[in-house]
Length: 311
Image 1: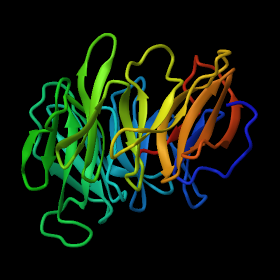
Image 2: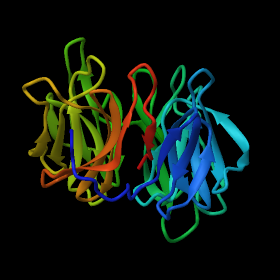
Image 3: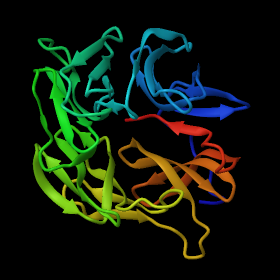
């Protein structure tokens, strides 16, 4: 991941932190000032849903394109979930409570809670309109949510139940839902479901982001260890076969990556750290590699200066 060609800027929203100030870079070239404590973000309506943490409770709120905050904020578990077309953002909190924000006036809807102890974490959203009785682009939605030990879903129809076959959900898009089926101190095993039925299983990867065309899913190492992963597999969503692997160099000079997100159906963006430099790198399904954001000097003692949106 060194001395790569410089490509176009990311085609999704992302943040950069410079001289103690953080801004969101929109896909239209605009910038929005935001808290330095941002850990997740997603475009929504006329602004962004942002989640902040680090040295304070994890909190979600909506902000306008000029950085002005919305009227409310919510204490939540880590992570945002976004519907396939980006029309709905979901988040979850203590005692299994679940909310969504959608593009219809940036409104907030509350769902029946899932039966978990502790704090819940939203993973995926199915459906593009969570208001019952409304037409296009959808007729309700459901949200997959993790508790400390089990995955559940809650729907706008008032249905709350376990996600079948999975202990914990890790990704979802449309009819596809992936997650962990078992884990131990040495490894984990995962499965990909389609319409709640197991399509394939693996003990080689944990399943991350699904591509916008549903053809590929990102496979991270089945066992997380050390500073961060150095191997990323692009898997066929249909059967789990490996379409391409980005792996570490044998000489030990390899990048560690974080926050892997599909930019489009053919490219993945990752935040990387290598030899004292942070960057955003674009990985192609065809094996191509280039910078999306040029390297910046930094240290592992401080967090990454870049953050990619949740999709």
